[in-house]
Image 1 (cartoon, protein in one colour):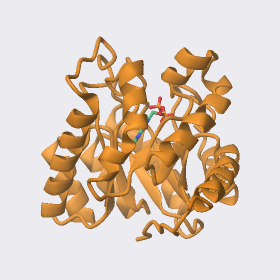
Image 2 (cartoon, helix red, strand yellow):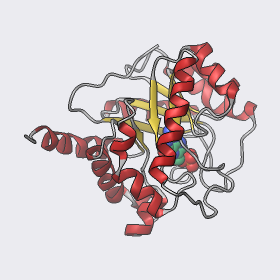
Image 3 (spheres, protein in one colour):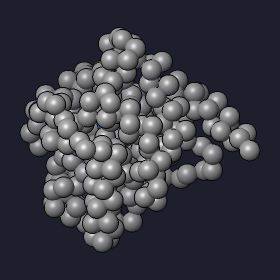
Length: 271
Ligand code: HH2
């Protein structure tokens, strides 16, 4: 099983591979196994440090995909990539059965947008020996954007992540990454506060992954449909890394890698 490396001064890039017909920004693009495999290899060549592979969209309003369909989408791609990638891969799934099969097929991490609230998901992580990405979500994708309310969004997300990290650690999971879940039951103000105050989540002592790529809050601030949100994505990545993000989950790997080479060099020059 591959482990993420964190070279000092390098913000890691996690390339997104959605093998779905309906993801919010790239639905249908990588649905054939051949297209998905070549996109994965392309993202590695473009400087991705990790890939996140998913077979179910979690965009606001989306409905769950049957297990058999998710298996059909994800497993052949993981199997085809096994032994061909140098970088680790996470599987983005809500299903414990799929998570276990994905790890057997070559995934190194389990990324769960429900933050391992399902005990079977915790068991899957412990049983496989995979690392985890614990993401915070308020509610569920179908309804999460219907007026989310927090007293203090950063405090609430931080508490949730701290509790889940402790639970997974106690279950024997060795590698834990935290994610505030940008856009998952959060309005514009919530998303901005979470990015600006990411250091408060980083202070829990685990690596932090941030997923801002092409998301709606960028459209609200700067306009544009998802594929037109690259400049806003880069701005949010740079700001997020300055605030403490270790890993940036993005669609546009080549562009974000270059942006972070510059941003990281400037950060390193700070006295
Ligand atoms: N965002 C999406 C999906 N999975 N996982 C983590 N850990 N963090 C995120 O921010 C995150 C995630 C949504 O983006 P995308 O995969 O592009 O879209 P879709 O869910 O429509 O496939």
